[in-house]
Image (cartoon, rainbow over all chains, first blue to last red; front, top):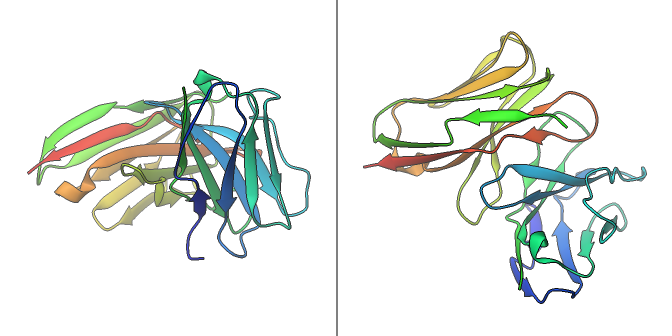
Length: 114
Length: 110
């Protein structure tokens, strides 16, 4: 597609449940990022994928968070045993190559844990 | 991690006024980016800066990469109502991630 597509756009889940968030990057973009945006905060880096290289998971806040990218395209961010502090907007972005050319962001998934 | 301080946190201005916001870092960066985010949307790239001292314009927007490499500013001239949104700076030095500021919320009063 023309842009980065994320689904669902909104997700309300009960504390303790698992959730999966999906990102469809721009076709041909090799780099894919997940960021988290909490209310009134800047964007917090979570994980980065580049081609077939091992992902950079250095931003994942706990082992309840994991992500995968299948076939170098679609990515799924999974949060297990969700907690209320996981409530945030999860943004996916892709770029043509690694590094300093800026990202194109999706519209995000707003996750609310009740 | 890198600390980015963005100021002001919020601005309320009259339509037609000029706007200035800035971002400072505790460490040097090789790249500065400025994004705008509207409600319910992801951030959209406005301007990218790659060299210390660089001054770049995009329509009514002008941004500069500070000579110390620890700061950047964004100016918007002759503001209009559609400039409303949250403006984020982001910096990159090494590694895979950009570090984002906490944003400047801009309200333009018609």
